[in-house]
Image (cartoon, rainbow, N blue to C red; front, side):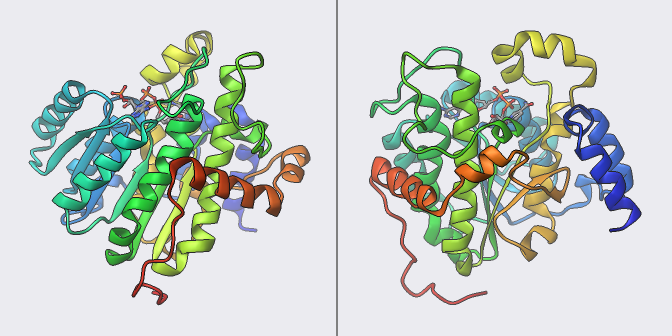
Length: 333
Ligand SMILES: NC(=O)c1ccc[n+]([C@@H]2O[C@H](COP(=O)([O-])OP(=O)(O)OC[C@H]3O[C@@H](n4cnc5c(N)ncnc54)[C@H](OP(=O)(O)O)[C@@H]3O)[C@@H](O)[C@H]2O)c1
């Protein structure tokens, strides 16, 4: 272990130093981070969900400044268009478009995939960032609990539908914005969707975010041979409209310590741009370093191979799409 590793571990242990702007500032210096604006992403096609606000908007702005071709996704076409206009105006990069889709509506997700396939002959990076923590229980059009539909099932369907194009563009990347909140939740399939009677937004969110991290590892195991690199991450705690709305007291009390949206989005942009994430697959990252996915023995014990298989089967079944290795794409990189 190097001195830098020891210092990083000391910050990682207490959540308050690791997740806040303190962790960001110390690690940026410790590892001498390359500034994001040094990356040239010209010619790379990036699809980014949840791009109208918070972390997604910060990432989209940085990608545009690095010259990427961007497809921004949010639920409302007007809000999307406004974001596109702002980003083109500030970056002077005209290659930014939008598609309106609710990630919990599988018909809209299928239409989104169709648009991407029709309008782009390559896909370098697919980013599942859209997400929300909702206090009241809602359902998606198919009846699935909305957090699970929009952050677990919808993203799984979108990856499945774009798998061929990602493989053709290899080495490509699929990135998922999870949350440090998932550390508190064990993997559950039967309890993945909380019912009306036991629903608690923070717990529902943590279970969905845990499922995202498990599925990320499973995608890497099952489809990494296609030259697609699957990585999940968490951003620490960042001040965004989403946090203000879902955790108002936390947001108010912690504000001086919260990361900016740009700081929260840093590792997402870096995972999309740097060569280092192409040397591994299935990682879970914070501040440009891979992190363990369990901090509690309770959650580690819940993460069994059988439960993983059942999760994959349930998600495939729910979205009606069992991903398969594309014909003619079975070679390794
Ligand atoms: N901020 C943090 O500290 C923090 C910590 C841990 C994890 N995260 C994760 O980071 C991601 C971004 O969060 P944020 O804090 O930036 O939140 P935010 O400011 O509320 O932004 C959320 C984005 O997701 C989009 N979105 C929400 N539900 C959607 C759906 N069903 N379909 C399509 N788009 C949807 C929203 O777009 P429209 O409303 O325009 O549709 C918006 O662009 C989320 O996955 C969140 O769980 C954030």
